[in-house]
Length: 101
Image 1 (tube, one colour):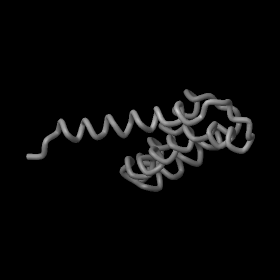
Image 2 (cartoon, one colour):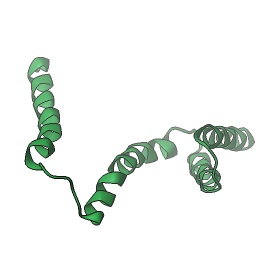
Image 3 (cartoon, one colour):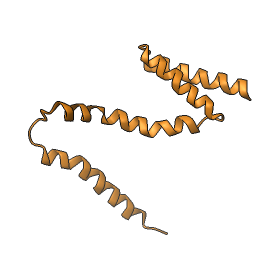
């Protein structure tokens, strides 16, 4: 059986060093607009990369996830808030899976 405490220690060191290195290396504010823009969108891209496969795989019908993604994107594009987007996506999956199954 692998030593889980060793894995937790290594994971903690890697996570802490990723957070600590920018604080120690970058002493002045970042003035480059491209780098500022890049850093601004990193959390959103990370969230999208983690959730996109789940959107397509979690439904019983893969097309339901894809269509829910498109309807949710359109709702968000037309200034829908997070609650409205979630409701539209859930209703889309419910409707499609009810019709197909």
